[in-house]
Length: 316
Ligand code: R2B
Ligand code: URA
Image 1: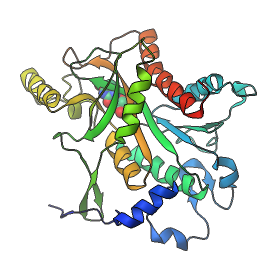
Image 2: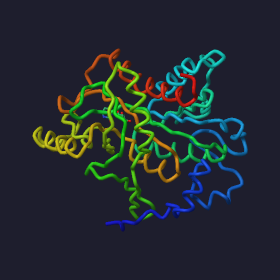
Image 3: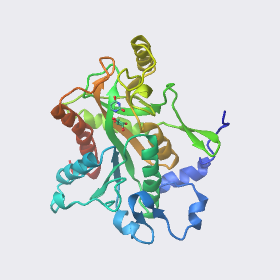
Image 4: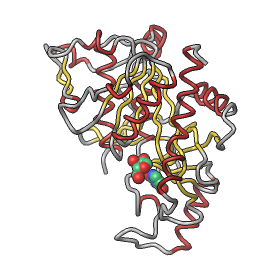
């Protein structure tokens, strides 16, 4: 069993407060200062090859989501919503040199895909956070917009996460570093969550609530599905587990929020997770709604975030 450690990457309190007050991203890695060039390999960007401050210095909102197409649609939507000049169709993928992630910049908004699961989003976040640091961005708000499975709530409900919990309903992310397990906090920014909920009240077309989000390592067995290639538990055991999750405050399940919350928290980024539920897991496991219904559901977090951004920029 690997030893369990407190998190030594956590800066001490005065150090952390200085960073938070300055609004800069708090990266905590002394080795980075030794690099003459930092290559953000999975973005196909670097500090020598690109002028990151002039490309990204004005970024104030970063929105991340699983699929490259969805994040392109979001960029087009934000362009329209903010009433920006130019043809939205000319918006290009900044990471076109790699097919790992897609990135679009629309005024002060950066829209980036992160793929599925903790390892994929974690790689993206390391490079994104370094990018924001190299670009000297300040007071950035970062939001994951995504999909999830709901527990005991109407499909299409948007869940704003207050805390991400693991499969044992614990508010923590266990990061394995060398041969140790480092336990990290997965609390999201409470004021930001409340602000988003308030914004949602101005959109009456879909329900929105604040709740715990369970983050798993898998879509099938890891989320208690009976319809994977493998399943070793009964229907009764599945429902008992999901009911326990509900009683612990979990309202939806997805696959990235824990590491997202943990990394943003450590780096002093104001972060939120806003996911639409595609189904109610107490009613089934298969995502059987029609294409148009699912497309409309996936637009809901985008609508909410567009409203929030416009409010923040004073354009609504
Ligand atoms: C939500 O949806 C994806 C699985 O279908 C996964 O990335 C997630 O968190
Ligand atoms: N994404 C998940 O991770 N789970 C679901 O049930 C639906 C979307």
